[in-house]
Length: 165
Image (cartoon, rainbow, N blue to C red; front, side, top):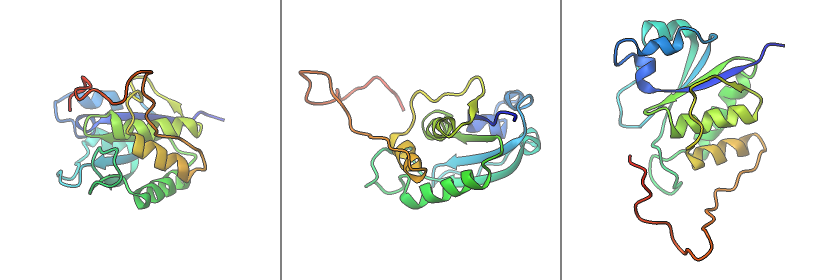
């Protein structure tokens, strides 16, 4: 059986915002795309190359927030719908993008890896959105705790974690 592939990309690769960015898509196996945008951002318009690679595009809108109490965060309903997309396309290559191709799409790509997909090169799963990751894993009966464990002697997280934006 051939491996199922997954990868995550920034929005610019899918839209070819800087000419030539879609080269990253030209040699990947065809599959489906989970498109993640902020609720207040314009609709993603895939480039011609992207449309030739992605046979279906499933669109989701939520902010890159880790606090479920905030408006616009990844909801339980979002998780259920995304899990249904994954179940429906379980034998397909599955790709995802978000604004930067890091946190939200990285969480989805990480979950796909846990479910048996192989990650293509240049994917970033190292700083996944923990709310997306935990809710999506729960939809597949896999546990993931998002509790923050601080080093001994620390009672809070530094106000400037060094991560921008």
